[in-house]
Image (cartoon, rainbow, N blue to C red; front, side, top):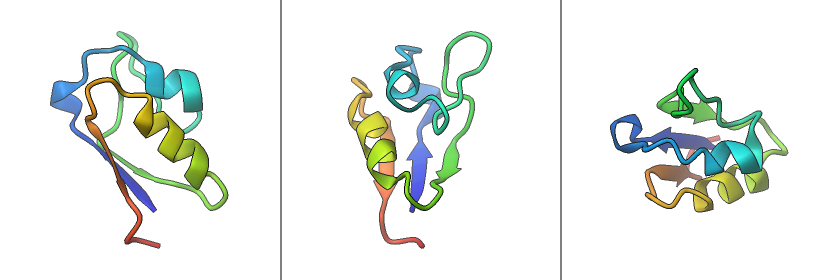
Length: 66
């Protein structure tokens, strides 16, 4: 599973990191630090919850990858 993030649209609410801080790293200013995440096995539900927490809906879950 991969997570793709439209970093340019991130406004720094940090709700993704509040839900799943180990999966959604923030930069020093509180914005998402990465554009793509390879979700480790067993963390899929946590990754989805972090994505759903984003009010801007800039986080896309790609379940088609392994």
